[in-house]
Image (cartoon, rainbow, N blue to C red; front, side, top):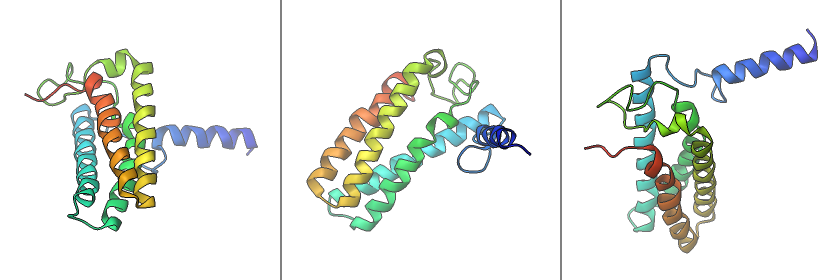
Length: 157
């Protein structure tokens, strides 16, 4: 097999399976939306674990694990938003706004920003400086999570 053919096969496999080695999302739109929601809930728990450390209710290693998990989860967000999984297609089951797909450049920019905030939080937590963690935590919540949720997620009623 030639090098270019191997490269093409690997690129195709990466597109199908993503960096984790498994299909990036379910072929069933409802299941894909549920997987996205489960990931977002876990991200919330990771943020809570960092907050618990900041509040003196948890130890640094737990916050470090959570910040690392959050950083990895944020990286997967685009793969968790396949077309057909928004609130317009799954009313009452999905709260993802159609803007994710109608404004993909804006969504990608928001994701890139959220990833940068998650990277910064992870680095701060690894460093252990509470002042730096507090600043990065606030920025992650406001500009990282909030930067996507404001434009791309409808509030549940």
